[in-house]
Length: 115
Image 1 (cartoon, rainbow, N blue to C red):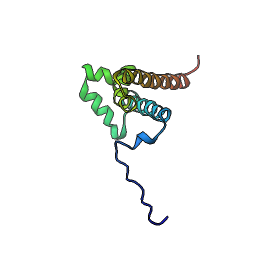
Image 2: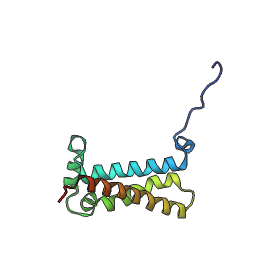
Image 3: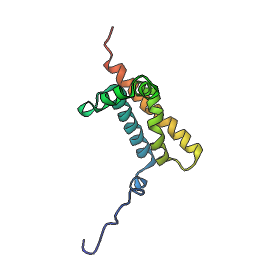
């Protein structure tokens, strides 16, 4: 196609073209992945282990060990991409966190040994 130049996307407009349900699903998956990485894994090159050791047993250290607590903190920024008001943000925030916790519980049950 001669003479047709794609419009460059700016970071602010990148996700706005996607369907809201798809953005919501991506927010849940991204939140779950970060929660899983921080709370349950060592991370690449043991980076998370080192962070956990540095955090110790204080507030941040305890937060890093609790996937339920982490999901609330990690879900807050992605909820901003879905919401256009404070009320919508609060609903999106809790829904994203809940979705991440649901996935974590589902995975934990699948990997738990049978009695």
